[in-house]
Length: 421
Image 1 (spheres, helix red, strand yellow):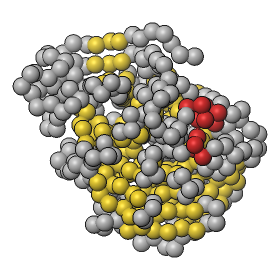
Image 2 (cartoon, rainbow, N blue to C red; image 1 turned 180 degrees about the vertical axis):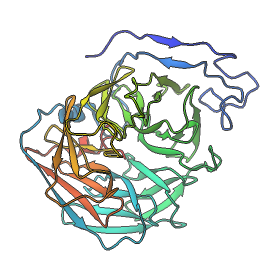
Image 3 (cartoon, one colour; image 1 turned 90 degrees about the vertical axis):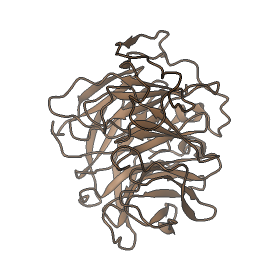
């Protein structure tokens, strides 16, 4: 149910909220590049609540919210989940790929992290191909990606200086867009995942960067949307798109999250801090997020025992996952929806799959053997309900097959609401 009110808390700081008239500005209406305080003072802008607003139904993108809602509203099915590892030839580097994207033809693109190539998985017959990156590998180069309406994929730069455009029709992977190597500390660890906005632009979630990077896929131009103070470097990982056009970027620790409100009329995009969730004692990291409703989303526990919930501008902790240590070690990072009415998070620093529905979650043992530490990073849901775990430190991808799964439209599973990272 959508709220019909908004409460904003803005604690005034020294200086104007908007930049001075002679400040260097981008089309976001805030200072471009350099330190945030160069002509820009966010005024400690904190969003306490956000009315969901009307759904954006005429976006020009080939996906409908109705098809997505049909997936995330499926009643959870009973049964177990079967897992198996599908081998690829040995990978010579550690932490090869990070995150994946479902293609219109049913293939899965794995985003290169330390690898010099894109891995393309064909789940229908357990085959794969690799497409080399123009210019070769970048150490921890990209993390996560999004599918464009024309079938191409944009990968999000982590240490790489530019986004990566992956063309499935030509089998190519080429650095793309404006150079971002000047971001933060030498341009390292800039972003972790992102989403395709309903305006057709790509938004990258800042990790070490001090701004949200907004890419125009038609031109390669990157607009820097500075983040309000007191944003903490290393604060977000992963983003969630809502059918109102709002974008939420989940906090990676006990820090504020971010809400990006893209302009609907070509004007200024807004960036707000979201109040941090109440601390869980020591640092409570979370790993990305998945949409669960018109204005709700959830992220898995990464170094704690609870999922993090988002609703209408507020974060809160869900009940603890039974059996999960209060201070775990990188247990889960990013996941995907299946068509059995549940969300699945492959193991990262543990041996069991996390299966979630509603506010609850449980660990499910795999029958595929012990998962290697950091074996999988990222997951992609298929229209037939299987979930593909992207190989990270193992020469195989993980396939999860839940009982009670059903087949849904490709439209739903390739939509930017579900198909990211």
